[in-house]
Each structure stands twice: as C-alpha cells, then as structure tokens.
Length: 143
Image (cartoon, rainbow, N blue to C red; front, side, top):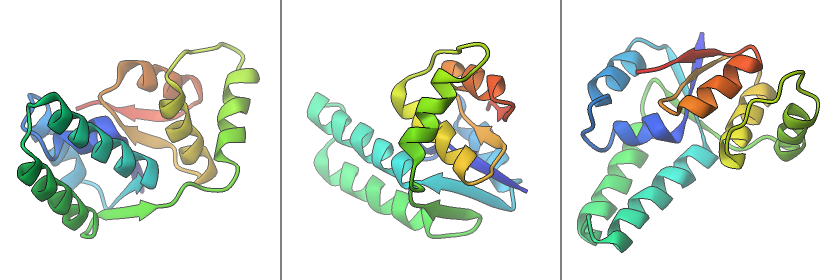
C-alpha cells in the first residue's frame, strides 16, 4: 500500500510544527510514501519564501533543502515526476465532477498526479485539498 505525501506534510518533516510528530509517525508506518516533484518544488519555494521574508537564514535554508533531499532519497520515500497529461486530468476533475469541491490549482495538480499514478490515499494537512480528495473517492489521512 502507498500514500501520497503533499507539500503541507512534507514541510512538517522539516520544520517543527504541532503536527510534525504525527506526520513522522504516519510516514514511518507506511511501506511506500510517494512524493511528486511538484511537492518537492513547493517545499523548496516555501523554504525560499522564509529566507525572503527574513524568518530563515540562507545557510539554514540550504541545510534544510539538503536534509529534505536526503530524506526523500531514503526508504520509504519515492520521488516521482509529474505524469504526462496531469494538467488535463486536473481540468477534468473540475469540469466533470458531480459536485465541485474547491481547492487551489496546485492542490488539484497533486490530486491529478495521484489519479494518474493510481494512488488512492493522501497524507495532507490542507483541509480544502482533503475535501476535494474525498470528493474524488480518495482516502485522506490528516495528522
């Protein structure tokens, strides 16, 4: 069994937050944790935003990126590239859903990636993304 890890929970593995321990425990219990290159990019952008905003020094940010890369290179993680046609799948989720459940475009791309990879479980702390995932029949794990 596999679980898709979105950027909201990936960042909780890097920064101490109230849900960090719960995310780490959920990840440790999984045999395979899929992280897309989109989630990795989002995590890097958010780390860079903390540098730009002044809450994180650049040397620490670079160490965090190296830590993230090392973590993602180890079990149970598997980094996957975005499948071809993922944007079109995201559009179909929005256009052809019986009940439209709103989430951000990037979150919709995560859900389309899951669909393309035939994954049905997501670990996220994003409520809107979780609601959209449930509307598509995915199992949502919240820390």
